[in-house]
Length: 177
Image 1 (cartoon, one colour):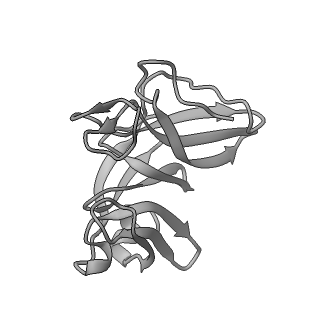
Image 2: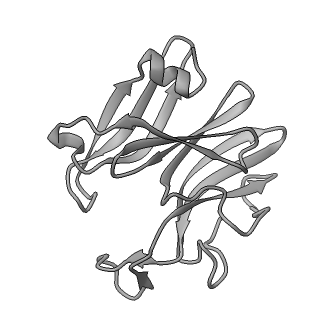
């Protein structure tokens, strides 16, 4: 079981929506976390702040059960959540949800990430008017497809699943030809 961080840590309130790779005999996990919720969030009895943000943390495990955090700070900020990480060639690609659409970041090692901006913008239709939720990047030999929740409401509690085949330009931005 993986629990939130110690009191006062950036992920002390909650951790969730992990993405796990098994490489070189170890499990590598990226997850979203936060120390408080935005003011006005419907949860009772939890810390709230007008500066509440999410971030992406990193943990490792040999058995997939007992996890350690190699560093105390998040590996990626930008109010990122809904993490999905895939290996493409020698590097790693991470998609994260946002109100603008699905964002992209790349890394050589999984610990230092560089934002690449928006991978897929909102469609302009009502279905994803409020952004993308928990994106998943499916990389196949002949195509790359993004699956994500399409936020129908500002509260992100009414979603549909959308499927977006990536264009040649989008495929190049994730490192696939």
